[in-house]
Length: 242
Image (cartoon, rainbow, N blue to C red):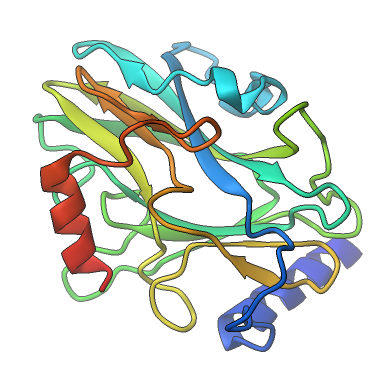
């Protein structure tokens, strides 16, 4: 149970903003990215956290997938420093209308699996647009820093750690993208937390955030291949997170 108290301590620290990223940060974990990988849905006995996707070099991740099939999309922290390790990730997700999980159009989400030790999902606001894992929602993923600090290096991409996976089905072309967490302690945040401070490190968005495209281009921040987001989506997201 000791690790639970340690993890809860991290939650209190991050939510209270006691260890915020400084305005002029050293490099630390700032080069880290949040990559996405899409694969065919595995069906019954779905255990995506055990698929070993975090052991596969993120430069090989699939970021484009056909429409009309079930897909498992994995959320993986990558390019992180092994000396500092990873104990947290704060991010959001966008795949359609805010607050909607399934509407029979575009990308719909039908399954969710937590792969970190603990999570602090955003609570629904008045119109439920921030609830996780609906589109537009946010979450804080946590690993116990002393006993389960993520330091597994996958050369040449640094530490990789799987935070979660979602099962989606697509009825038409669309994208699933990583965004800032709209319910951060001090406003929208896109951060990882190391195991040393623990200290939170701001990540660049959208250049460090993965996108899976369904019948359209995706984006892999591990290789900077593809486009961060489709032009129309990018405009909508910018208006959300200014």
